[in-house]
Image (cartoon, rainbow, N blue to C red):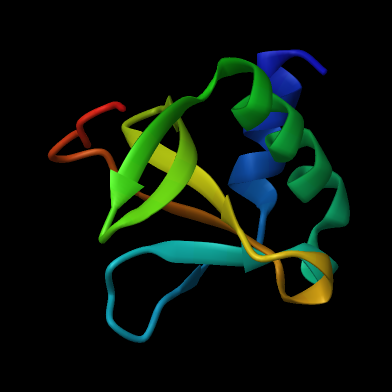
Length: 89
């Protein structure tokens, strides 16, 4: 999938804000196609970070940092403003 089509999917996704206002997310079961594509993009183009002692693989685009959390139905795509950038591992 090209980046233009990916961005269109990202823009159309039903993003929800976390209760603590720290990030937004889309649940896997609400947007399966986006979750699968984002998983591929993050795996291929992402970078490793450690946040609160846990390892994550992130991908930056359009001023946001994206990462995946969980598995199966409880999995989600997360994003937050990339400010400040996290230190890469």
